[in-house]
Length: 392
Image 1 (cartoon, rainbow, N blue to C red):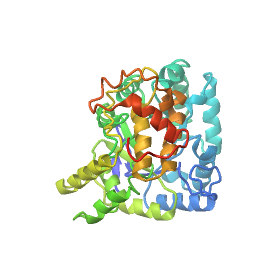
Image 2 (cartoon, helix red, strand yellow; image 1 turned 90 degrees about the vertical axis):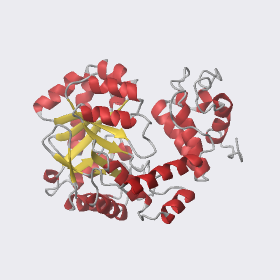
Image 3 (spheres, one colour; image 1 turned 90 degrees about the horizontal axis):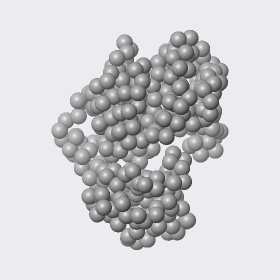
């Protein structure tokens, strides 16, 4: 296992962190609460035995059961071998004392007296002012740090760079943050700018979704063929992970592993990872793969975000991505799952159905996409179950 500096702390984290959002399940549903506990515990302990020292879970993962299983996995001396991270579900906090109620419940489920790395979960432009600041949660955070229930405080993030910067600068006791980052998402959400900004402030940066929810591990057929034909041979998941590990600002890369094969594959990849380890020819292969992903898009959106924010709250790039994802994999089900995720994170207003055809976005789009014309088509396919048209 390779180890990396963790921000300003005097501690090094394993290059690979075990993400416990996609543990093996008995019913095959990757988000189900019906976890295969025996297999999950074996996987987590095996990873720790091989040098993983960062285990990440959250209150809501697997319908609230992930923390319970992680607590069981860390029995028999395994808790002392790792740093444990979990997250406060800030959207459930209706009054300040809810913070402590949830934290104490998590400590019980995890069978521990302290959480090493505690995150305010999924901060964005709504949660920051309307929950964190409104309820003065930092008073509660400071008390939990003082009494030892948590050791370090951070946040995970799903929004744009400007609010990310505001959050980083909004509290002087942040030790770390967690962002989505991969070779497709360099300008999405916090992106490369956020990665560099947080690291420059001394924060450790934990990366989630390095494989884009599995998309980069199991890419569409044209991308798989491209990697197979490349002169330098690596599995698609390995290319994606090594690209993230190549960045000096990255402290830990989380992978949500669902079976032992994935655990062993990720462990092998982590063992040869390193900052600046990719050669120019290797970086060129990844750049070409990114271009080929873009070529598969039916809608030529580059996620530049010039169209945002939408005055009606529509997540324009997110809708385009869900639509393109289903088209690239020739899977309407995949596209509709992405559409549902938009509603989960952004509410119904984020969906294409909320478009009022005001055309404000079209004036700003450098690709000259007819956004207002496409939104009804996207909703008819992803929201109403119509088939994908041959072209749009």
